[in-house]
Every structure is written in structure tokens, then in C-alpha cells.
Length: 71
Figure 1 (cartoon, rainbow, N blue to C red):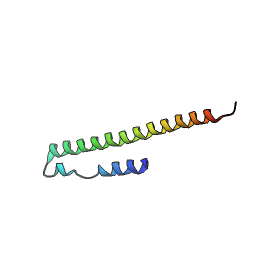
Figure 2 (cartoon, one colour):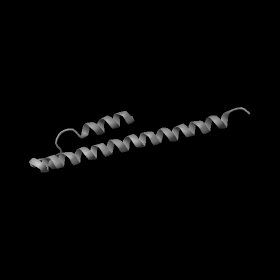
Figure 3 (cartoon, helix red, strand yellow):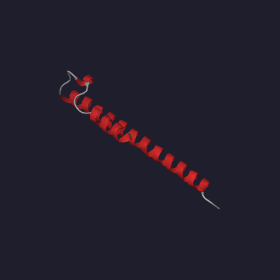
Figure 4 (cartoon, one colour):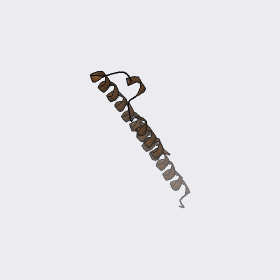
């Protein structure tokens, strides 16, 4: 699920954003760069969320295993 989310987020940043239509020169370049930075931040947040969920699940599994072991 997270992999699909990352791929979809990265793909959404391709092309010229609607907000940049009609701009030329340096204004167009700045607008496209801002869109690329936003896409990068979004994908980074998804990956960070993915890692946090993995850590939470790992700790939960470790606690579960420790609670069920025989003494």
C-alpha cells in the first residue's frame, strides 16, 4: 500500500502544474521548481510515515513475543 502511495505521489509531480500555465522564463522555472520541491516533501513524508509504522509494528510484535514466551 505504501509503495503504491509513493509511486502515485511521485507520478503526480510530473508535467507542468495548472498554476504555472501562462508563465514564461524565470517565473515558469520557479513555479515548476516549487512544484517539484512540494512533491519531494510529500513523498518524503509518506516514506517517513511508512518507517514509523514499521517501527511501531516491530515493537508491538516484540512485546507480543516476549509476553508469550515460556518461563
